[in-house]
Image 1 (cartoon, rainbow, N blue to C red):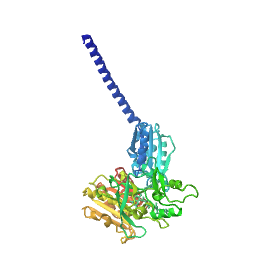
Image 2: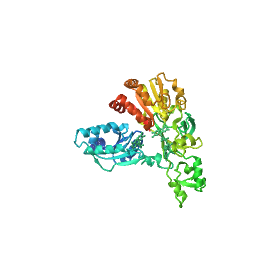
Image 3: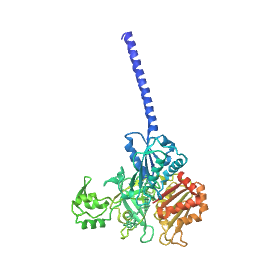
Image 4: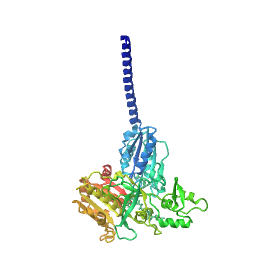
Length: 491
Ligand SMILES: Cc1cc2nc3c(=O)[nH]c(=O)nc-3n(C[C@H](O)[C@H](O)[C@H](O)COP(=O)(O)OP(=O)(O)OC[C@H]3O[C@@H](n4cnc5c(N)ncnc54)[C@H](O)[C@@H]3O)c2cc1C
Ligand SMILES: Cc1cc2nc3c(=O)[nH]c(=O)nc-3n(C[C@H](O)[C@H](O)[C@H](O)COP(=O)(O)O)c2cc1C
């Protein structure tokens, strides 16, 4: 190679190197610009959810949006109003809890927005376009009330609704968009369970309380104390046989369900056994019969026990037949007939701190949540104080605590159990025990205690909430909610 050729080759290599460096610098800045756009122009999907359903739906909606542009999914309480002020688009997916109230992880945001609307009449959120999806249950008088309240507050702050408030009624037992667990016959196929034990804890006829043990056909999933099991109940086999007989159908006739040949007696496991409408293809009609509604249960055990346990009150319909979910779990299910169930994350009821005192309040089937929280502390060797206040009807018929938590009663130095029997001597409810021990309650809360309440909302949860408000004051109770130290697993 001549000197000249060597010179040109060196120049060409230099130019190629410069072009390469230039390309890297340009793409670096382009990426930075893109990232800046992501953080400032993200679509906000905010949820307020007590038991995880609205959160699940928010995450699904975010996935749909993500193909289009960057999306930020966030709990409503974690969303600063200032962040929303700078945003252009938001979707709110919110459920309603209590009596038309916000879920605990939306309450603080809503208060802040209301306060702002009261104090300033500037259009704070004027650059925001939004949509609200409200989850609720039409069996409650204040159907989707929090969705409505949030919608009004957003409009008052100058935001523009791009669509009318959408209400989803959980009472209709329609599948939620994107909820594979409810969408089809094959629903929970990935998660099949069998009932291995039904232990009656009380001796009260007509309101039996059972500890139900389940084994998973697959590896046990992970869960935490406070989580929920959603189950797909089955019909009793006798009810299926009667229905087939009445409609003159052979239980072993095979029909195609989502392409899989299935005998009628199995197809009917999860169908609402309504009468067929006169003439027409019976098989087609059967495929159109709605599924039995899902039922939720607070999980009563922790994975360290190697089994999933529930505590279930057997309910009865006016005609004396057992409730759909409770009848299945306590009476009809057995190890021969697998059914589908899914563990649902319920983060507001997780109590991560193990070194703070715990006040566990519950009644009836609320023993489920109490048992799970106690088990968590037992297996973690926690020695922090635990105070259980538990209510039932009769001291003679409902002495259920020993059978449910006996093994652990001696395992805790600082465990105190107080029981309230509404038909005892004297007749007492859990709130009466709380009032009598108001000073002690204030002390333990001052020592950093978490409060966890489990059981029926109407019968007990509301009364406990009111009593805590009376003892601590509304602001202090709201602060406990904001600090995530007041956990409500009430239904
Ligand atoms: C988050 C969550 C956690 C829960 N945890 C627990 C738990 O740990 N333990 C537990 O036992 N329950 C729990 N529940 C309640 C549970 O989900 C069910 O609601 C309960 O078992 C009753 O359901 P079922 O299908 O057995 O009764 P259903 O068949 O739904 O009947 C329920 C009641 O409605 C009444 N009823 C039904 N039909 C009629 C009618 N035609 N006319 C008049 N009255 C009627 C009956 O009196 C019956 O008692 C929880 C609920 C939620 C939301
Ligand atoms: C204790 C309790 C109170 C409820 N109160 C209402 C209510 O006042 N209005 C309503 O429309 N729905 C009410 N619901 C129904 C819930 O909003 C509905 O089940 C929703 O799907 C729950 O969503 P989440 O899991 O995101 O909290 C209530 C549910 C529970 C368990």
